[in-house]
Image (cartoon, rainbow, N blue to C red; front, side, top):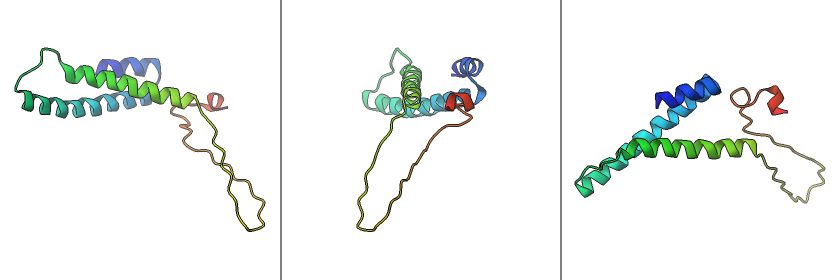
Amino acid sequence: MCGVALIVSLAMSPVNAAVVFLHEVLFFLAFGGIMRIVRHFTGRETAVYWQGWLAIGTSVIYLAVGYYLLHHVWQTDYSLETEKPVSLKIAMFADSHMSTTFDGEGFA
């Protein structure tokens, strides 16, 4: 797990490496609990270290989907009706990840 975080740190940034490492730890702990339950019901050990492989695989898939969704932004338009005489337009922009994912140039 630390090796993957180190590679990400060298390739991207220490902040992104911390995010990758924390996701790996979270999934490692979650799959550890799941594997403990499986061992309890089956009564046997597995020959493959599933906890680690599942943690790494799930982290890669989860973060890859997040990366894809980050770089493929979509617009949602809403039309609200009211009886009051109002001419108003509202724009909302959220979840920009400024400074952790985008710099000023990438954000533009």
